[in-house]
Amino acid sequence: MKRLGLLLACCVALAVAAQNQRQITVTENIAYRTDVGPNTVLDLAQPLFGPQENRPAILIIHGGGWSAGSKNDMVYRTLMIDYALKGYVVCNMNYRLVQEAAMPACIEDVQAAVRWMKRNAKELGIDPQRIGTYGHSAGGHLSLMAGLTAEVACAAGGAPPTEIGRAGEWDDHKEWWPIGYIGKCTTPFLVLQGGEDPLVKPNLTEDWVVKMQRAGSSVDYVKVHGNHGVAFDQQLEFTRPAMDAFYARHLKHDDPTVSFEQLKVPDYGGSGPHKAVAVRERSLADFVVYRPVNMDAAMTVGRPAMWATGPVKKEKLPVLVFCNGGCMDTSIGYENMLADIASYGYVVVAIGELQMFAQHENDKHTPSTMVVKALDWITQQAADPASPYYQKIDADRIAAAGHSCGGAQVLANAADARLKTYLILNAGMGKMTMADASAKSLKNLHAPILYLVGGTSDVAWQNAQMDYKAIKRVPVVLADNTLSGHGGTYEQPNGGANARMVRAWLDWQLKGNAEHEKLFIRGDLTGYDAFTIMSKNFEKSK
Image (cartoon, rainbow, N blue to C red; front, side, top):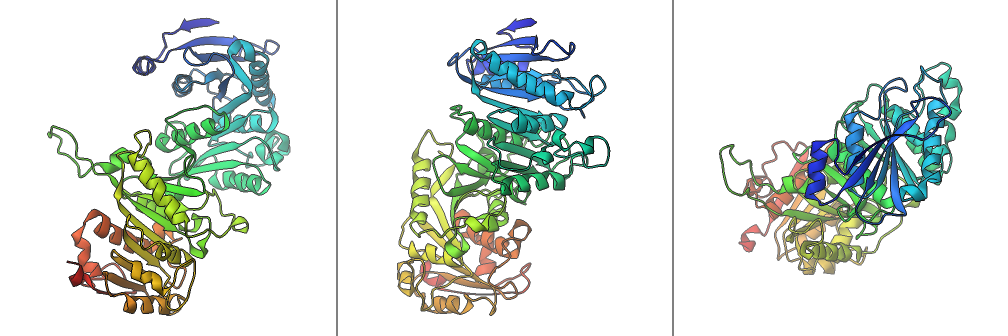
């Protein structure tokens, strides 16, 4: 074996190590088995900082169609160094290719590498119960197989073939493929997939994910635009944070740079300039936060000229609290709209757990006090220097929106001074009482309010009309998408026309974009076919 010591082969990695005052050793070409030939070797990266025993570990498995590829690929070497700098012990392995030894030799080699890591755990300074795996393409397949057959703590795969997808000898052996192991598995999985992958078909990947989830297994699924290079050299701004959170969660590595436990990319990140993700924050149980994947970039106001000097102007991101229809504890039916809003420079805090796929049989009602919990969290994060949202979100620009019963939850909290505007979607109180709100709640309004309904077929249409007439003190707009019904357009790509109306209101009320006055006050409905709109009390608010 060849010991490189503290000095890494990659200059970039060395610079990172120096910058963070973190040092690692890399040992190359260690044989993890000696009974089958020279290719069963791995490289080992060990942190020299932090605890030197019982550390979490990651095994990296290269791709290449089981017939090519190597641990020496710069992508895998860089990944090894990156995770070692984060405090993991990392092994980067080779395995026998199919021209050297037929399938399932490569699967057996991965199992052998895991056994080697466990057998030498004390010498390596690792906890044998905290070993995770990662691989891409063929390596993704082998990583998932390790999760299913090698008793690792977690397994992640990028573009992983879950079945061969064509007739032939390999297809006759279901035990070589993840599809042959459908059932409840104690190992958590992370699957990263490109939506346009021509080699590993997304429908086959999703079929395995859904079947495993329905069987009771924990499978996180991140699907983004891209082809077979997703999670290898494409879309790393999405896939790498998902991996960081996955390993931090399941290998129990305390990484203060990872504040969230789970990540999803709804509707490919929205239509805006700042692609958005949905995350489950450790500090906010039972909510989903939709935000730009790069909040710093989303804060930039305008594009400075190439020759401009001086600091770039930054503006904190406004916040939207969202309450779901039925007062349910999931926003999955609204994630297209909420991700789209976030992609235009907002942070959305939505009631309910993060779901990879809809699980409506488990949905539960939520109390209206959840709005207060969200507002308290926003206020705390904005003021906490240790929070990733510190100086990024604006606690003075908060809106609350809710669909159907969720609209009543918003009105139940109308008196909260932290709310600067309200959006009541396909909802209204009229003479009814729901979710701790009634017509009396309208007296607590202190900021502009938008009602958005779906024509006379919308069961909330009449109540919204009554509320509009009853509101005397604050500016109010009633927008009617006459053909959309009670469900609105929220599940359409990017949330449809209703989501554009919601974003226009937020841009006007929270970002001060006066251009939208022509829509909401003057009734210019260009681009909003089938809508009608009316407004009042704006002159009183000036």
